[in-house]
Length: 300
Image (cartoon, rainbow, N blue to C red; front, top):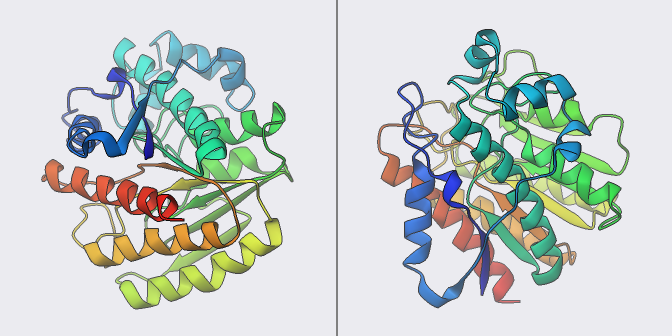
């Protein structure tokens, strides 16, 4: 059985400036529904405001939840923060936290949204409103659910927001493997960054991932992995600069799963980035990631 977190608030109308970002979640849901009894569904609550304020500035949290984000911050995010987007953002953070809880119980769980790794303390950025990865990691540690968490970010863009928000917290480690010359221009400092040259393909990517992540897991010895399984390293992605194939993405996710399973580390995944006009193809890549991870853990 594969444990999946989803909420109807995740499914929003596509935004004109981000046609794939807010509409793909419904397609992800429908593709997972087609898997039938293999999927166990869970619905998240809104994350409590106080937990958002443990990571984000209280003023910014108020701006989001009251749908009054200033225009300059909305420009950094890439779309307007309406009441629907505010509800979605709060539920998504709750979903990543719930996926973490479920992973600790079952070995693996996936949130069908999330991975908003560019959101910073006082603003969103890069199609990210609230940083679900950072909030979930901090909450899981501070409530004593797990002693150490690692955020493993395999999106094509560096997880700058997550790195910044988790800096100075020794119980949370951050790992990012990304295209060096891609957004954001100014990178933050993760616990470990693995920058890759434009056009890096399957073999070089998988070697770099294995050679860097395996020793880091052995050093950190986390009780939980929060995995940002962005599919934008795909060679045809509109905002990517790497050259992974679809089989390469599947191999990436299987490698991350195998590293976790070999060490007995539960893993919770989020969808992360994936951009382009063919939203159905993007959704299919996200679902392939979830099923690859889920079936790897189910087979153990």
